[in-house]
Amino acid sequence: MAAWFEGRTPAIHHPAIETGQMTLAERDGRVLGFCAAVPGEVTLLFVRPEAAGSGLGSRLLQVALAQARRGHDGPLTVVATRNSQRFYERHGFVAVEHSFFVRGAAETRVEVVVMRGTPPAAQVVPLAERPDLIPLIRGWFEAEWPAHYGPGGPGHALHDLQAYAQHDALPFGLVARLDGHPCGFMALKREGLASLPQLGPWVGAAVVLPGLRRLGIGRALLLELERRAAALGETRLYCATATAASLLERCGWRRLERVAHGGETLDLYDKRLAG
Image (cartoon, rainbow, N blue to C red; front, side, top):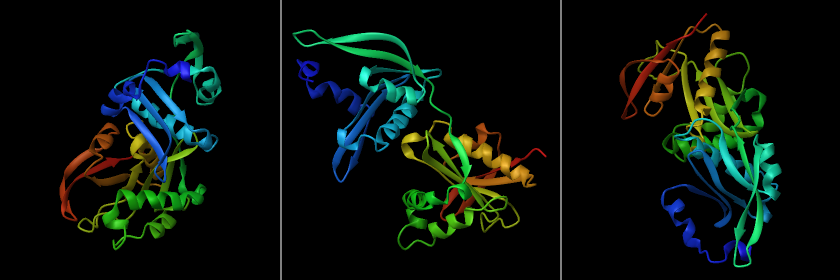
């Protein structure tokens, strides 16, 4: 380690920090790991020994992969030390070149492996199959919509999630996972905007973890929700959103109009499903 950092200071990481490339994982104010990425490459990933085996490395890798995917198509690259090679292999990377870095006045050689891979696609399952995730997703709801689900709000996250945890009937919810880790949620329900009671069913309660957005998770959730809705005999779905217009349009939804709801203006969309 002394040879690795000889002649170098923490300032080498300042550009990555200042441009938002680096993400920290911390608990109770103590940093347990970090990652960084640029388009096309995961550049840094470190987990303290005390957090090894906890799944934190996998979670940080998914954050880094999401960042590396932005503005880049095709396989991603990571230059791994030999002791981390198996970790990346478990996440779909393969070795393409063996090399080394030279560090320090003594010219210490550190073996590395250039690896390439493609981030795994999100897996989507019904919440009914994973009711154990309800407490976790409840925390997502309360963080994403504090005015509704937070203290003093009119919503009840636990009650709503319990209602979404059923098979082959509305309402139902879907959970997305990356590499086995829950990362997103979406639901289909009969009731939507009180001002438009004649319309439905409605897509709603959509949330993807902030560090993993723009990785196709929302799209995977929406397409699976559409497929399941069609299987139940639904022919037309609706969604009112202030933030997901681009996702809906990429998935073939049609913008109808703007509507007022809860003090904000929402875009109203619909989509007709194939029989």
